[in-house]
Amino acid sequence: MTAKHKIILSILLASSTVLSPLSAVVSATMVQQTEQQQGDYAKSLNRMADAIAQQYPIEEMAIEIADALRGGLASGAVETTSEGAFLETVNKILWETAHDKHLSVRTQKAIQKRMSRAGGNRVPTMRRVSREAGSGPLGTTKITGEMLNDTVGLVSISSAIYRNPDLFAGALEQVKDADSIVIDLRGVPGGTVPGVRYFLSQFYAERTHLYSNVSRERDEPREVWTENTPLSATFTNKNLYILTSKRTASGAEAISFGLKNTGRATLIGEKTAGAGNGGAFMPVGNGLMLFLPTMQTISATTGKPWEGTGVVPHHEATADDALEKALTLIDTKV
Picture 1: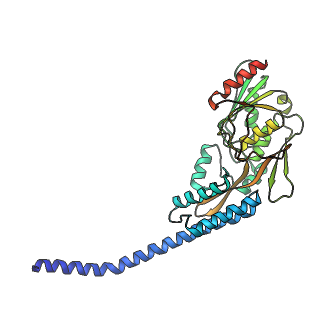
Picture 2: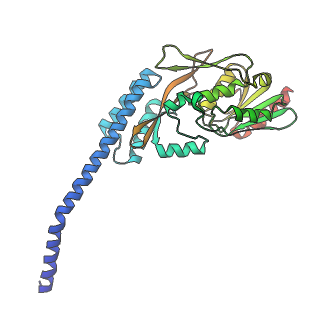
Picture 3: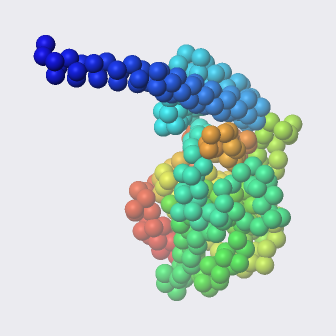
């Protein structure tokens, strides 16, 4: 080995000696941060499990879901190494255990972005949903009305349905002269209980029991009835046709469900999504929100829900063909 090489080797050895303690500190910090993150995600998961066990509307299923979450954490099936892995593995357990299209966990940022696109003004947390009727709606319903011909009107909704009386009145005013009204719910992802109830109330002159909600906090189902509105008398005798698709979900299904079970409308299209357990978001830490179903909607006459099965239309048609099918039915009836 030459003198030059000996000098280089000495420098390298000296450098490694200096860096080694620093590397150890960095490694220890990273381990500590990883352990902290895993602990934080474990706390989030336990918050979810506790809330589900206490409030999910079907008690036997609630215990099963909570146990599956805790078991997944203990076995390592729940990944706590990153946000993406945690969400993926937790949602997988939730779906495989409950098959509930509402029950899921997401980031608050993702929810706010989705709500904004759907017409919502704020994330529907449990407190806000329960107080919506008194403190203003959670969002703005995207609704329009138009006459297709002299006797047929079309009401189109392209967002979640909130309690917006003025917007409902504005759209319905456009079709008040129609004998038959087609209501397009094919792309509606849901709605709030006050919004759905008020929208349905436009089409009943007499107070009508639409459906009931079952929850763990009440011994008996909570009945949902129509209310009198300024337009009830005008629209109570209109022939109603509802367009549905597999994307018609949650609150939009409640509209289809209520109108069908009371014999008030004819449904045309595809079987709906089957998301019949209503609820709201709750924070579980780490910027994550759990959508927790707390009630199940059941028929006023049969006591059966549509959760998991969907609402079956009177006349089946693809989503694309539903409007044409409805118009044909109207022409045939006339």
